[in-house]
Image (cartoon, rainbow, N blue to C red; front, side):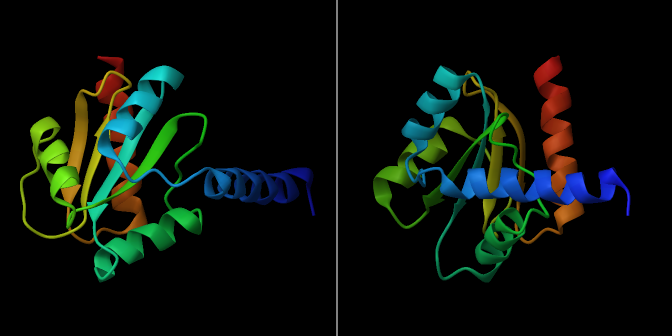
Length: 138
């Protein structure tokens, strides 16, 4: 067994635990303010607890299959059934589609970089993250 095969899973586990230990952000404006203050991108999941697609994405994030490094991202899990949240979300972001979750990746300044709707696989969400990172560099 080499050092790399030990270190990589350990680092992934620590990063996942650190991300899970951060307080849950459920407010659009709070997420944007925190991202700007910390110069991080926002990964915002707009959905509901009763949504299977939303829960699948949460499980992929929690399990480390979708990598949201706490040093690069503020993660927000916002409720589409809350009227104020829906208004804040729709006033700031544009998403094409009608299937939950709506996922937005925004720059630290709040500018929308990438978006998608509906169920996705971990590789599809990883591609969305890479696309957002490229758009941020432009």
